[in-house]
Length: 237
Length: 256
Image (cartoon, each protein chain N blue to C red):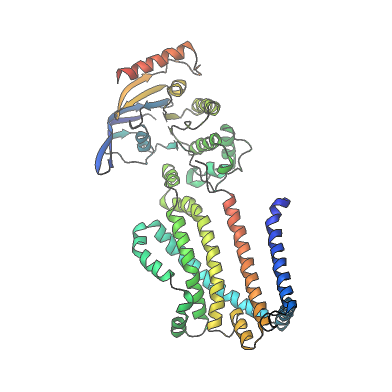
């Protein structure tokens, strides 16, 4: 289920003045691939994600997506329901609010939280909460996972674990993933396509499909790809 | 439960024992006459007398029934109106001045009017309790509902929850601690109001027993009834504290 964004425009009213955020954005999100969106703060990354999640309307342009496409959102903060335990938080997004206990357990295992099903968010670490948030999005059975800097608040080791889990999820379930990140290394490690957003438009789109996964972030190849990406970014400055 | 967790209860009992001892000692010293301050023993005997005659049980049941009715009515009205106000800030802007005007009027000051309008029967007393319990609960419900985190509401929208399901699955559970605290406060207010109401116009109930004892110059009975009121209020509060504690223990903060 590919998604086509054509000439997308979005403005916000800030202190009585119209501030354009997206100015004619064109992008193709290919089915079953990870697309990483990078760019400076305020370039429209999060707005793009929120529009796709149905949280913001857009002003002009077109989003061509198959009817009934489901978007599962993973926010920057875990945003779990504090009064629900891990199991109930995951089942929260199930179709019609219901979910088979076996499926919930399967997701708990998938995100590496076996034994924590009965724990409440306040009893979990930041990384564990973010895992629950990912499991909740997967429980929604989305065609696309939308992730807004989901690992930005995590330490190096937890972040690395989560990135590996994400790759495993993509490999096993072939879901499309749109990942907004500030971290170029993360984009290089995960993405099939890295999109550089600047002034509300796609300034560069680098195709990384030729680079096999799993990738070694400290290999010579990684350095070369990073150089290429940085050159792309440099050209657009 | 560890001994450390038991300590607050033990401390409370120690303070109670000290107060009782002080009361007993003051009576032994005969600083005041036994009429003004009867001894703990005399009060205990008065309590036993009230129990064996059945007056105490009747009074407690009558007061409990009135509190129950008034409190239940206040809960229904405060929940409905508090939710509406919490969900609709425009409505809240209209109703806020009236609410704050009426809530600052002591319910007991309305007793003469209520007796005039509703007669001396049960309706006036239940209405007084309703008025005492309604406002603290209403304000807490409104605060809980309107204070629901927009970030959590957005989660509901992102996962396609209808407005109705967002209310049941996000807004109401997030407001529950505030609602329970409001109910706890409202119940305390109800107890205060019932005794006042029964002292103004009633022929039954704990307030009436106190007034009756005063007319008969039985200070021991007055104190016995006051102690029973305190005990009932304490037990109600403990019950609610347990309920609020269970809800709050689950956590209200997800740490984000």
